[in-house]
Length: 417
Image (tube, rainbow, N blue to C red; front, side, top):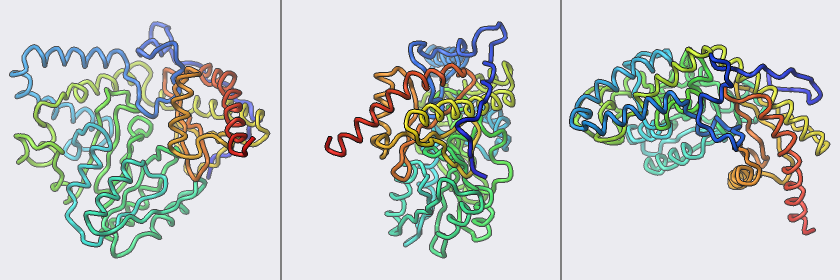
């Protein structure tokens, strides 16, 4: 079922998480206290302990590079074992890549030419990933077919929308695990089972899944899966997982050929010239910090409770201001993220949404996420352990009225007033 939350519903704010010494959780990060950080979902935030670990590793690398780089592939391989345990997958299925988009590009580059082949995506897909699919389709002399999935579509409706675009010409399906623009899940398990039955490769873009979902690949049948560890996992940026299963994985090669190019998958990904791999090696420190301080289960529950509280507080303030409901019916909601509909006149396109993000940061001192889907603008709320209810109450009290003024100004400009 979708997410229907009454804007008059009273919800108690979750109690803020604290560090072991009683300090606020945010003290474990280096985030600028002059800003409100309400958009963990875009670029993540690295805790100080992981920053310090990465700095130590960089110092080690720079002290003795001739010792560092020959030993690096084994250290990366050992790290893969730790990260695979966090994702609950086999280390032999997991390669490390700089980000989810790099993993997607790796898959696109590995697939054999399929003249006239079609690639099925959805209208919720991440823009850069869809652009890559379009480029691959042009190389194939084929085309991209876009499944239109209503925001409120439940699992069955979303599944039917995707499957309706499949045909004998389909050479690849690209499907989000959790969508970036609309903060909803897609039925990757059911589509995966159907894709396997038809012999169609499935690439799952799970950029937001690590950390938000305890075992993201459990029950999912797919050929390729990519996920960022620098988002909800709080690892240093440039750290992502590429999980590949089945015969096609042996066609995967890193974007940079190096001396391990002849090794099997995933070992060939452990060495890529002189790339700085310290982010990979420091990633377990970030994951372990969350686990040892609060436990991932507690952290996930807090993030979801806080996001739900934020949705109600901010949504109710928008509704009071505009007289129009801001509640969004999301068919397959996800933990830790919520959508609130913006007043008409704001973020109607991706370009406008990005511009609004920059303006809110520059003028209102809040790092936030604005998205656009179907010509409607949304505030995408996301929460992590360092956020508190006060962050979202501040946004409701101080930013919503200003956004209302900006929306009215925009509407007036468009109407010629």
